[in-house]
Length: 223
Image (cartoon, rainbow, N blue to C red; front, top):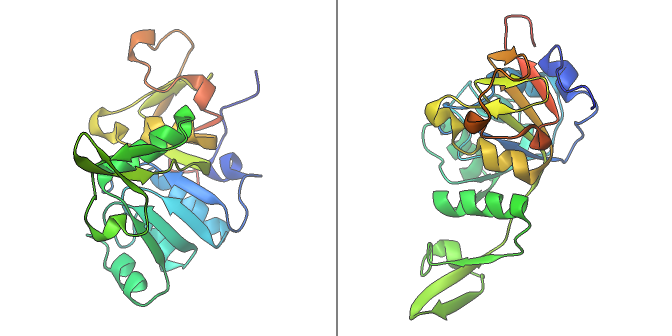
């Protein structure tokens, strides 16, 4: 089995970054955001990123760090609030934003990981978000056709992992992370600790190591 445990965020990102790639970043607000990986991403100076995340963090934290340095050109998200820079860049035409209802965003990511070609949902029917999309009446209710989304790299936050990359999460910090791990070509997980094999109850593992490529432990020296 290939080595999965890396010494730092920079090392874990090595060889994966290029201008124009698509990133999936876990989190809801700042809960579940892999901050160390976001800092390393900012310091890498990679540009023209498409970021898929529930939101763009806040000013100065999470993906907000990358907005400050204008490394992101497109956000696929469900929520703009709490980040004035996000709002301002969108209104100024600097940042392209594709808004999705939150459940639709989650299902599009899940579909990407599950190999589902497309799906119909009634959410957003009859609103601006359904413009130019195919619609269909299903049992008398208008549905909108949505397509899956995938990422080149997923950056997610777990509570702990073993060296095979089996991951458990901390309560609501779980949010989008399990489905992003499935929908990305490469998944990097930031955790609080790495434990020996067999110390995680298999019934508690949420993301199996087959979906995880690299793992780092957050500490004061991992940037």
